[in-house]
Amino acid sequence: MTKDNTLLVTGASGQLGRRVVELLLEAGTHKVIAATRSPDKLADLAERGVEVRKADFDQAPGDLAEAFAGAQRILLVSTDAVGRPGHRYAQHQRAIDAAGRAGVSHLVYTSLTHPVRDSPVLIAPDHVQTEEALEVSGLGYTALRNNLYADILLMSLPGAIASGSLFAAAEDGGAAYVTREDCARAAAATLASDFDGKRQIEITGPDVVTYGELASIASELTGKEVAYIPVDEESLVAGMTAHGLPEPLARLMASFDTGIKRGLFGPATGAVEELTGRPPTSVRAFLEANKAALSPA
Image (cartoon, rainbow, N blue to C red; front, side, top):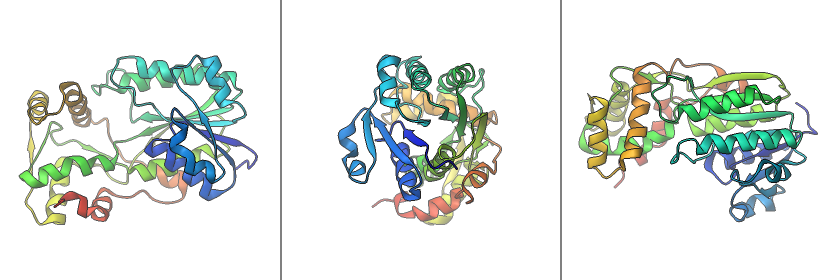
């Protein structure tokens, strides 16, 4: 680990980016720059010695390079601009170009597990194109291909527990769910490392978990019987929209299930432990720790 490297984290006002900054501060071995569209949200981090800079990925690369100046290694947290096709990738491309102009030596990117060109997952093209851009950028890079966050289960399972039915379009496929905390720890360790080549790493939890297994775990933890009900993708979309979810978001969520059915969210790997020295948290342990959120009053 090179202690004189300056590390910069983009998207630092988001949940993942902020946590990475906090972990780097706890380690105390590097100068840390937090980049965000909303610097006012990071006043507390500035008080702790973090240099906070404004960085807007809709800026021209030349302007954005000023925000990256002086950083040797950058964590590029994928943006939340998923509403307009191609916009997210365009933002990433500007950030990559700016990193090159700023003299950055290594860029760590939060990608998607198994980003293949024929993926049914609707956000996969953004990640495919970004990884391709990194490959030809001249930068050293690490693509951290994060699996589905276990944290999203705290949004989907309470409704299933309340109704007794967990609907999904994944058949008997499963995902190697990983917690946001483990993704943050892996990102912080990778950013602070000395690796300067090119690599892609599948970031997963310890096991592939199916919807049937999720229903069983939910039943055991809450004492309420939850059944897994397999449906097709269109029926799943119809059900979500009937409950008030906008159709574009419903189709995005359903596309993840189709990816799960195709096996794109497994197998589990040992990457988190290899990068951080600690094993990842299992879905069961995560849900046990957050049991109160599964059956809110």
